Length: 232
Image (tube, rainbow, N blue to C red; front, side):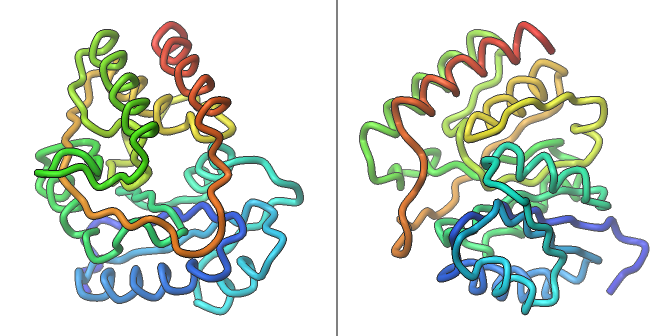
């Protein structure tokens, strides 16, 4: 391992993912070992009612547990506050993202070709997101972000990202739930950081149930795009 290389912090928000979080961590550890960079994995347990925290603690990673359920936005913000790395990665804990694709997202950051790399479920030859309603909503959010910031993206809501820690410096994030991805993207784009998208795989969850409400959370995301642009 090159100890002069940048430290990579991987932040994994988790809520009731006992069936998948262990596998995600195992695969992340294997990939990070192959990459050969110094790294840390930070799991933020959002007051899970199952064995998510217990499974994670058995994986030799840093685990922090909330004392009440707060939401994905709070979890990511807590993870960012704990992260020590010069490069920060976010990945979902439900198994929908492939840890094996982490080098794909990391390389442009390591080579100073981008400040933020987003893993897109839509930028390949075929969209990999199953629900047409979600896909239509994401396209609307993408268009609005382009109008406001000029950033051209195909998957503004992707949770699989790699970024330089400096893009978060001085950034005041307020989101509590799923709108966190939009808030981050709008504020980072507004500050003219270099944003790149690369196609990734996406697998629909096989365990558990997503807590995302397409109507309630969709409205929050929409409002977050406007407020993030106006208050940055």
